[in-house]
Image (tube, rainbow, N blue to C red; front, side, top):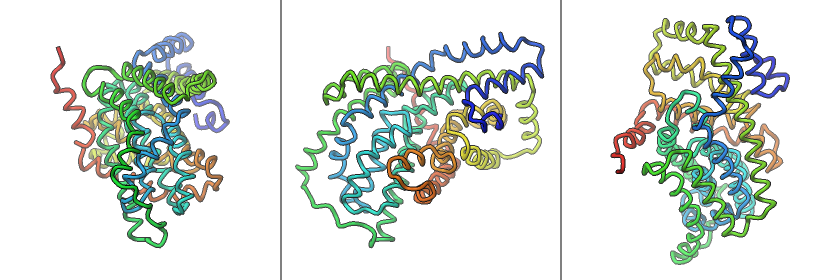
Length: 425
């Protein structure tokens, strides 16, 4: 598999190729018909419908004036905090993550707004780039999250429950990022620019009106799921309609932008769908080889505690994340990892949030840190410089894993409340 991936072959095709060889070597079943049935079953999953819809929603919003309006609306409230307008990177990414499931879309949208503004105000480059690299990973955790959709489909867990599980950890991680910015401003006050001129409460309130459209969209998408009005797929449809109305209201919706958003969503959706098809076939093939059962048996024989298992998996995913993008890392490993997790008695909803945090780390670790590539294209800095600026954010994500292990209720409390809520008549 690593040989095929190293040749530059598409991940989905590499997975199918390895699975095909596994079927030939370990079972008398016809590999062609098995592949056709498995690929069709995985691709025709109704749960997967939300994926292209959320991607399309993010593509539409990326082409609107949303990012510019967000900066104007947030800046007056954040300027007086320790660290000043650097907090717009974190809060902007948190807000946009709630209407986009993609880390890259979050990074590009907020980055094109905040980088020029923060540079013009004299903020140090290493803080602008580093905080943006880390905060953009919130697009993977705060619902709607493409990684959580892929994970939910892979392990057959409720997408809505996973989305709800990501809310509190996502906000805690955003708080940790903001805490780091505040600490930096205290430790290195000489690097901070002069404070922004005050515009007064009334002026700040007027600018906040610009945030109303995106708040309404967040309420439509996440609120409809939390209230039990809509499933994840239906909420995605609400989000697309809302983003189209928002783009039309801002006069950003032209035939050209609609076409670009559709093409962008189609490319990304097709890439992820091909990976999922290959992963489904590989899961079937791996089952016939007996590797997952044997590996789970070996791990079980070590009598690792759940804490030791999570520590080992954290290191494993950090290493594998250096060479694979997040979604590929999830679908490649779930066939082997899920039996271990189940045998150890670890909650699969909680584990989904853990996976997202370690995959977030992979977004900012070279040599294949996707956020680093996007930032390199936006800022023209070399990869080493961007990776160094993002290193403190990597440390904060490791701290987030520790908090998740110590306080598992961060991820499980909200889904449990949702399950216990009475179903409306």
